[in-house]
Length: 135
Image (cartoon, rainbow, N blue to C red; front, side, top):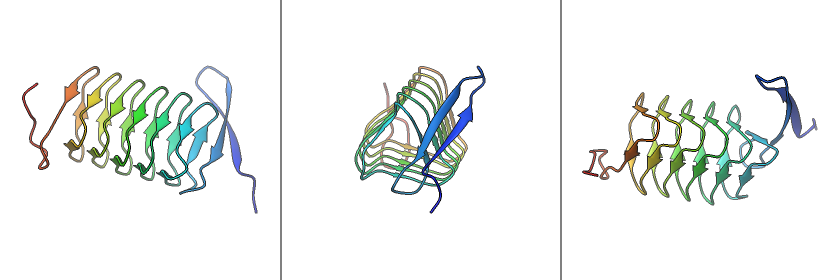
């Protein structure tokens, strides 16, 4: 059995240690909090300060930047990018290759489709079909 962590140098020349999450083998940085029942698939990166709640699913190749919050039972599809300080509400679904901007807020139960871009600090709420609701 191989080691359960990996060290990676960031853009500022600092070494960050990532451990492999028991559910899915995604890489979790030291300082991130991931509930044991959450799934973080292989190839996903979770940066320091991130909070991932119970039952959440983070797909392959997803990058969750520092201080983001992923709510209970949220589903992040493969290759999505959750920027720093963003919050994904409980039960929300984020599509494949979608980018959620810095400080953006996705409401509980919202559906964000594939290949979408949510702007920095934008607030989004949708119905179950993904149609945007008035703010």
